[in-house]
Image 1 (cartoon, rainbow, N blue to C red):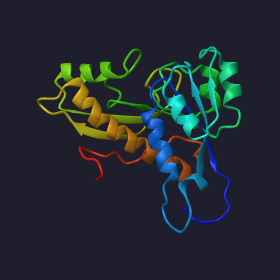
Image 2: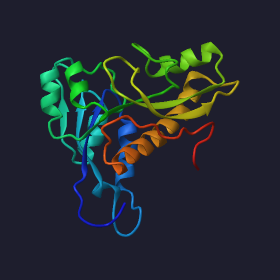
Image 3: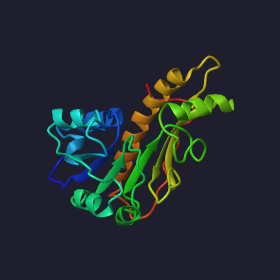
Image 4: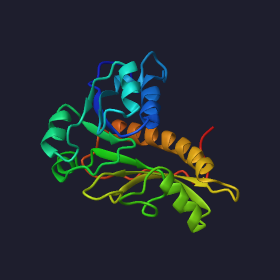
Length: 217
């Protein structure tokens, strides 16, 4: 990014679990790209929102001094809209609830989700966490990966922004596959968020280049 005074994009992150994708974003926004500036000058996580008080991601937010909200009713569109009032971009990072349609409409093309498989395969209601990797292995698929897509009114059905492919090894278990896919999730989510921010949060869907069968580093 270029040094100078800019108005950072305000990112709200919705979570249900431990928050490793949240942590990856936090770390990326703190890194020094050079010229004395930081990615956080361009974008900042301004709120972390959970559907349950026990979500480990909330502890990560607290340690960074980021305001948190625990929703009383994740299906209440008015409550969620009020909580997101100051956000420019909404990131679902392990958030398991279906976002109410009025919220999707308000943040059309500015709400994204990360999913631990290559959509449209292995997505939809109930397909999250270990269940996804069990289904991939049971299918005999030789490639899995991660997908970042726009959120629409259905689970895992919005337009795809980018994918990262991960080879499935012959001796993989759900846990070993999950670990490699999680690394892909972290890198891909950072790449997509940075891409959207650098493009000024386009008002129409974009498609970034996929990463096939390899990850950087």
